[in-house]
Image (tube, rainbow, N blue to C red):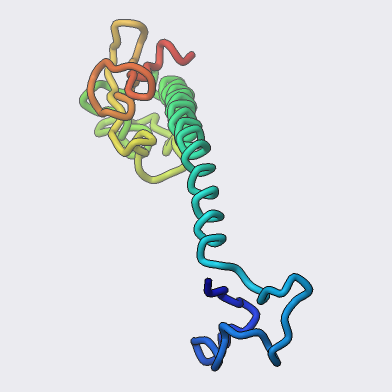
Length: 169
């Protein structure tokens, strides 16, 4: 069986040196074997690493999805605080037609606007890249902000469930 001796790899010239499969100066180790790894040993290690990744990978991905849900809830809370500042300055919340854009751009005919009320120049999308839905007045309060979750559709369960401002507070 051939043994691939990693000690004799000539990286400088991009290949193996002459007689890389043979021991240096014909000297063998105490066990009578060449130094290095067989192809079977390398494949076993790669298989073990693949099995570990197969077990750990889905768990890591579920943590990533859960963190996106938490990030959307935090963004909705941030919008709610910015909307409260908007209300203090203008005595009203932005209309549904003005939307969340009123937090970063002065709505027409608003003399008391002291914005922008968000740090960014644009209203960010939810963690899945979908725009937030804003309605004022809302059924559950003076305004409603909704992220449609990972699927971008109303309803859903798990990470696809809607994240609503009246449930986040």
